[in-house]
Length: 89
Image 1 (cartoon, rainbow, N blue to C red):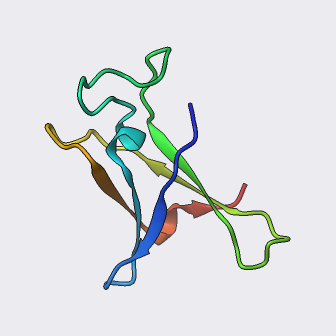
Image 2: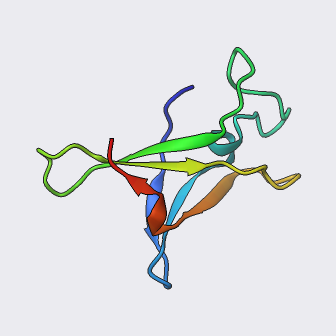
């Protein structure tokens, strides 16, 4: 549906979290709650390309399902990822 920015955050419990904006995960405008995609699409997953230290290798591709946003939540959202969600294309 589109591209966006985010970053990975290593938590104290050694798990990674993806930090991005709420509209990226929800596919909705935070003021009107209307879909941001011109055809009304709402994302059911995020596909994250993680570059590896060896830049000649293809990036690690992580597919993370989205969840229903908490009512009234706007601004930044954090989606945790488990190690099982990683895969290569």
